[in-house]
Length: 474
Image (tube, rainbow, N blue to C red):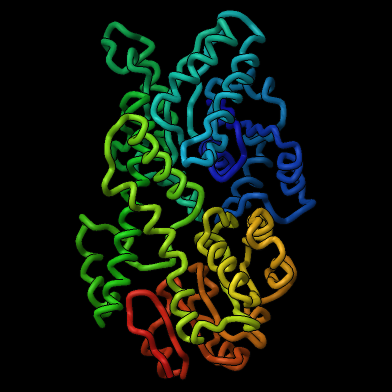
């Protein structure tokens, strides 16, 4: 199939590369000329990093670019003309009140509509991959009707990619949701040839990812699909919030969260989010939960549970700082703390809504200095912290370490008064603890990702503070 992916971020670039990898002709288009140039320089061997860090993405892009099944451009007219399916993968950032800003989607829809006017009597399938509130497909349809007289259908195809696993998640999706216009979904399949064509097109598109006799494709209406994405992320975010709150309680009453939660792994109703942490972050869970709360408000439906998820998560982000403050008797001034992990999760360079942002800001406000290491997230974290007006005069008190500056995680530990581990990168899972102990002024580790064994920390002589288990204080 001939496909255009509009937007080359954490969704458009991995999904476009995967589509190309199974035999489709894919054109990735973006209005950001610098981003397209950066991708092309990588493909031509002039740089060794893509702007999006995802496991396996570099190899996938290189292979399919070399085979000419994957191309990159800033020319949306070219991309639309050469494609039958146009995927909208642009950002939908939150407004100040938590509602979703769909302006980028609508602007791109207008550009696509104008680009469709290169000829008369043509037909395109416009696929909304961006996460959008219910009713957006109708708004996109209105925009297109005002910009082109040609035929089109609006299909909702939300993504369920976990950052850091976007390539494997695209190759092996757990479900594929296809939202059709209501008149197509409810139309008689025998009488409505277009409805049959749409279903067949998307079954064919996703056939390589729907193997072994499983039918992972779920057809529904646009509104169903739009709301499905928000509710799915809300379920997951709620479980993380419940896990963290329960782990806090376990610690308070002297229980051990690791022991008591171990059987949950075998309860298929609960799932896998049983590891306590400093809260969820990223571009999806926080934004989508805030958005669904706004939908509740807009529709006049009271929310007594979902509306409490974000406040609970914001509280959790500073749970380790509370413990650190207690350990140092509320005196963090002029002390230096090392942080391992700035990205909101491992295997991504995205720091949006990362707990590290709030943790660092809080430490700086208390007069502390910070040494921060992350293998990929430093450039994005620098940008995020520079946007914080409340710490603008304190940024000189943070020093960054990363693979970009040829530093190791151990370089960030020298003469520090403690280490906080905030992201579950593989290189943090089995570090050289004796080296850590030698470099720190005081042997204290605050584990924000449930990575280390308390018994081992005690044996090695560390003060160890984690979430859900009792503190080990030497």
